[in-house]
Image 1: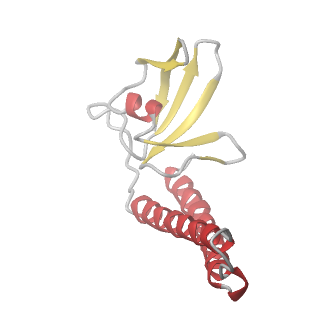
Image 2 (image 1 turned 135 degrees about the vertical axis):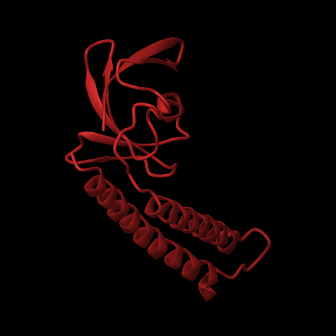
Length: 158
């Protein structure tokens, strides 16, 4: 699997999310400023509610914009055994039950599935992402899930 192609896939998804969020923010802003939403009395909160929605949508657009900038700066490199797992690594994990999964580790803000749902994109600030940093093939990590620990083995890193 080519990590640069995976990165382009992540960027495409983020760009699409940004475009959709921008349209939603514009729509929410128009609703908040529409003349029909002007309060007629102190109990009429439709305009206020629309303004809160518009504000939230605008924050979401800015978050996506910043995530996209951060991900555009990512330059996946070949795995270096001395450094261990870093941002841009493609990691194969095996759970205790034998289930295997591929993870593409990057900056925060882009949790998604890629390549026909076979690769999970994971940010380095997620609990599992934090545990993976610096690990090497053969290492085990233990992730608290509810009241129990889930153990994974790092099978491969590219």
